[in-house]
Image (cartoon, rainbow, N blue to C red; front, top):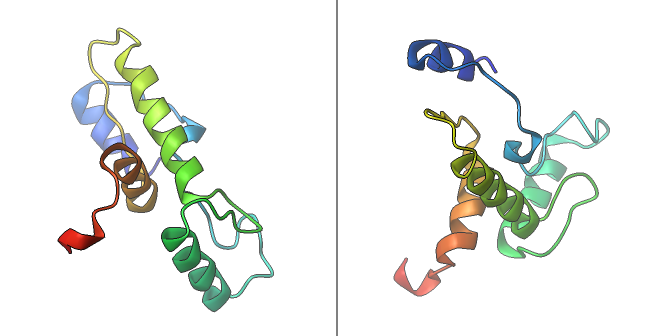
Length: 106
């Protein structure tokens, strides 16, 4: 919301939270006993193994699906102007769902 509020104001829209746009995992929120190193290890694994779900959070595949579904619903809402603000991880998850992984192109 801290990022979205000034953008929404300058675009003339009211900021609203859509939980489907949340990050796939949030360190410290859902699993406070997890160290930063454990979080990063789980993040890397869930990035490579897209169907794997960590103890707290969603799989990359599930996060991408909910992100794309949210964008689809927003596009169909009939609103004149929509501004979407989210995080890089879930945005990439959504893009990976839409265009696939082309590791051979890296």
